Amino acid sequence: MTRVRFAPSPTGYLHIGGLRTYLYNWLFARKNKGKIILRIEDTDRQRYVEGATESLIKTLKQIGLHWDEGPFIQSQKIGDYRSLAQKLVDLGRAYYCFCSPEELEKMRQKQIVNKLAPQYDKRCRNLTEEETGEKLKTGKPYVIRLKVPKQGTIKFKDLIRGEVEFDLKNIDDQVLLKSDGWPTYHLANVVDDHFMGVTQVIRGEEWLPSTPKHILVYQAFKWPVPDFAHLPLLLNPDHSKLSKRQGDVAVEDYLAQGYLPETLVNFLALLGWNPGNDQEIFNLKQLIKEFSLGKIQKSGAIFNREKLDWLNGHYLRQMSVNRLTKLCLPYLIQAGLIKEKGNVKKRDIKKIVALEQERLKRLNEIGDLTGFFFVEKLDYDPGILTWKKTGPGQTEDNLVKIRDLLKKIPNFRFKAKNVVKALKVLAREKGPGEIFWPLRACLSGKKASPPPEHIAEILGKEKTLERINQAVDKLKKAE
Image 1 (spheres, rainbow, N blue to C red):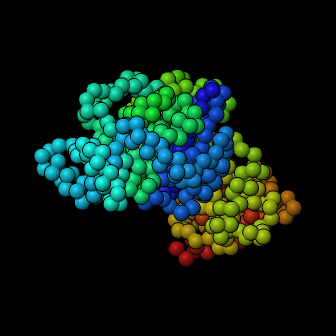
Image 2 (spheres, one colour):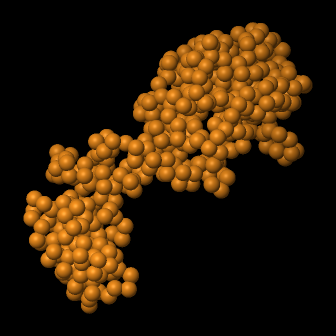
Image 3 (cartoon, rainbow, N blue to C red):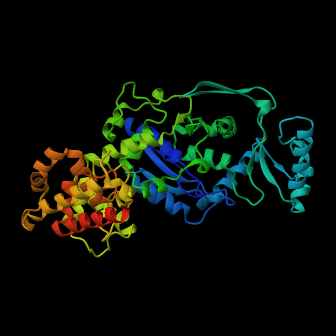
């Protein structure tokens, strides 16, 4: 059976690139009727962040792509890694290294001066059994290193990149067990992949240089080697590696800004994978059907924020108004526009959200787009009230005429269609722009907003007339 895994380290947030790795593993497992395992690789205690494991799990649950087994926590079985590292020593495939950090640093500096690639010089590899025994007896701190063959090559077929070859002279005698008794990534990773029956290791290309080290560990234990697939990097538009310095990289940040889980899944699926046609909108069923590692590109994939916004806008427009309103409520509360217990009628909020559904790209925009509905008095430059070459005086006259016509509509008939009907003759006489532009601007305080008749219906007659009067006053003061 196909078995893949996602193995993040709890060093902080879930990186957006990590989510893509999880997604590709998930799609591969589903396509091949296999299993996906979630494993938390927390053996690097220096970089461990309290609460990061819980945060990772919570974020993955929010995305909605559920794993089949786990989460397994590496730190819960430290004894197993120690036993297996010792087993390699007993087999003659690994050795004790007693070099102090100061000795290793001196060694590294000397290699740099001599323009050599820094790596361990293998001095402890040549210790006799007696010498090793004496050092162990005295309690001298040690690490366990893998005995890497001194010559030859490591070749493997990457499922994305094809044949890959590494010269063994460039592979260090890597540390398998640290002096504190904790395993390194290289040991724990291979041990877990083996005992969890992982058949394909699908991970980011930054792990490609580690692959020959991992293959050597498999070979040292005489274990079968899984297939490897290394995914292209995610890049900024300037082709630099996607990083926190140039924008958001945490999945939590994107969710908090109001990007939908289905948007992130669709968007990330297309970052490095090409379905072979121009289709851009995919649901999960379609992605599972179309996905294959053979369609993943080797070069880096550009993270285009504008494309992400466009895609999120598409999903928001397809959504029912009821669901969209429910999703928008926390953002309106956060913006201080409504109270949690409700100071605005639910049906009015629904109408307001529906009015902006076409323009909304992220849920966190809802406050800026609709804030004018919830405030008593608008603050704006009176210059936005005038239409093209119409002067302030003429705009003021037009607003007075608009106000007088709208006054005649009974309260219970103050609907969008009746507002348009009441202004139809005046709009024909003056031109639609001279009438509907200043009405839109005075009701919203913005140059861009929904049609004024819809704003007026939601505001109601009293507030609509009040805002027209405020606009007239602004124009008089500006004269």
